[in-house]
Structure formats: structure tokens, C-alpha cells
Amino acid sequence: MLRQTLFATLCASVLLGSALPAAAASPQSFASEQGSLSLTPVVQGLQHPWALAFLPDRQGMLVTERPGNLRLVSPDGKLSAPLSGVPKVWANGQGGLLDVALSPDFKQDRLVYLSYAEGGGEGGTAGTAVGRGRLRDDLSGLKDFQVIFRQEPKLSTGNHFGSRLVFDRDGYLFITLGENNNRATAQDLDKLQGKVVRLYADGRVPDDNPFVGQPGVRPEIWSFGHRNPQGATLNPWSGTLWENEHGPKGGDEINLIERGKNYGWPLATHGVDYSGQPIPEATGQTVPGTLAPHHVWDKSPGISGMAFYDADRFKPWQHNLFIGALAGRELIRLQFDGDRVIHEERLLGDLKARIRDVRQGPDGYLYILTDEDQGALYKVGLE
View 1 (cartoon, helix red, strand yellow):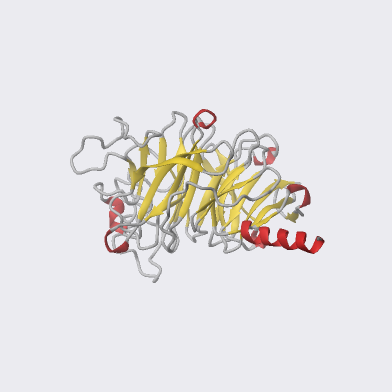
View 2 (view 1 turned 45 degrees about the vertical axis):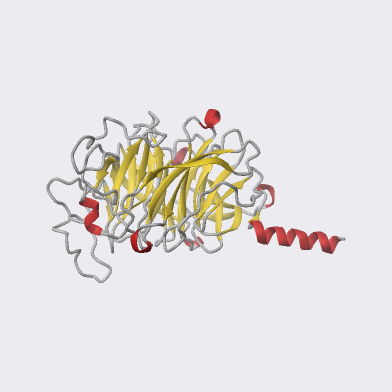
């Protein structure tokens, strides 16, 4: 009987990933400038996890897996089977199920927003889509899922979907969109590649968007000239939208997103092509009529999800910004004087894992996802 029970437990762990109840997890210690970091595994065995969102009232976390699964992680570290009602995704290259965000009125409407790569373009191409569905009361899936936005035209053969979702204080939805590895489209205002768009929560276009009513221009556009925005978050003190994006070979950058502004790609960049040659369209690191990056890395860490820290639990982290690094396999901590970056620290390098997302939890800890075949969700704090 014991053997059968152990076999059943093993089968469940294979099907659901390796779930680690918080009480049984063994934390690791890592050095930092502000004292020892504790890194506690919450769930392991995830398939390229991409993003997470915290449900209210200690109901756990929703986690996306790039192959197309949405999972629930309970407060005690148990991993659900894939939730039902999730759209079919185009899981190729960098495409798949990507970001997840809760409606600002989630407690009333239970709406969950998902961004994902959607196929069906000419020649087998794909683009970013965003939809929303209601989380069932039993947390088993989404119902009544509806697509509210599609990137047009679909141009990606597997790269640069962007895809972060951020609601601002007024309930507007911002979506970051990569240029699908088609550089020139980031400057084309009749296309949705290389843009940040601003919508109402139901997908309608606000009348006060900067390009509404202009012939040949997509009214959804809020800003343009972006390459591949992999992180976005709202500054909790100013309400400003912060975005980060991959440069080519070098030139990863942070931008403060402003209405109607051009952020330069591919006309301006601090990077070069992967061949080592200059970007053909680029005329310099800065170009008149475009905004220079707020902060730039000449050597690309491969930045991804990011979160400001505004909890009371760890005072040394107050007003810091944390960013996951894919190529650098680190967690980046930035300190500020106002909005100006004055110090950077690289953390968790010994973990040697691609950090895809970072979020502040309601308990004041940081939570990170590692983008691997056998990815993991970790809780990070100061000891």
C-alpha cells in the first residue's frame, strides 16, 4: 500500500511539476550588499514559466508557461493542473503564452488578462494578441474568454513579441509590442510592431490617444520606436509607466513612456547587429526627434520582467527597482536619486538561471521565475 502511495505521488509530481510546500522548502543563502539573501523554492518543474500574478485574499498565484499552460500555485506551494479556458497559442521560438495580469476590479469582475503569440498570419507568421476571461470560483479555469486586441499585421516568424501588460491608476491597459524582428516597422505608424499601445480595459481605443483621427495611423499607439519590450511596470510613487527593452548586441534600455513619443529604434541605438556590424538604419546613439533611453546598458544583460519595491518588510529595498536578466542570468537591483539611477547591484549570479519575471508579493517578498525547460518559482528576501 505504501509503495502504491509513493508511486501515485511520483506520478502526480511528473504531471503537475514538482510542488514544494513552503514549510518543506529549503532556502539557500546568497551574498548581497545589504546582507544575505534567502532564496526559497516554491515550485519547480515548470515549463518555461513567463509571468505571474497574485490573486487577492491569499488564493495563490497564477503562472503562465510559454508552451500554453496557465497554472495556479496555492499559498502552500501546490501546483495545479493546467487551467481550462486558455486560448490556443502559437508556441514557436519566443512565442507562446506570455504575460498575465488581473483586472483592477478583479474582486468584482474576476477578469484575468493574458497576452500570447497568435498564429494565422500570411506565410505562417504570428503576432501578439491579448484577451480576457473570468476566473471560475473554484479556480479551475477561465470562462468566456474573449480576444480584445491583436497586433496587426502579423509579421513574426518566432521573435520579438514584447507582450507585457500594465494597468495604470486610471484603469487604462498598456501593452508592449515587439517589432517582430522587422526593424523598420517600429517607425511605421500604420503598423503595431515596436509600439506601446493604450486601450480601455475592454479593448476600445480612448479618444485622447495621441494619434486618434490621423489618416494612416493606428489609433491604439501611445508610443513607438521600440525594439522588444520585455519588462513594464507602473512606478508606485509617480504613476509613470516604466518599460525596458532588449537592444540588439548591446544597448538594453529602460524608458519612461510618454504620450506620443518616439523612442528611436532602429534609428538610434547603443548596440550593433549580432554580426558585429552597425545597424543599417542607425545614425547614432541619439537622434533628433527621438527620446534617449532613461538608462542604458552597453553590454546587454537581456533584461526582462521588472518590479519596484514599495513594501515595508525589507527597508533597504525601499524605492529600488528589480529587473530579471536572461543573458546575464542574474537579478539586477537599481537604486535611485529621484528617477536617476545612481547604483546597480547584480544578485543571484550563482543560481545560473535565466530570470524571466520578478514581482513583489503581498507578503513583501520578491518572487522570481526562471525561464528554463525545468523552470522554477522562488521567493526572495533578506535574512
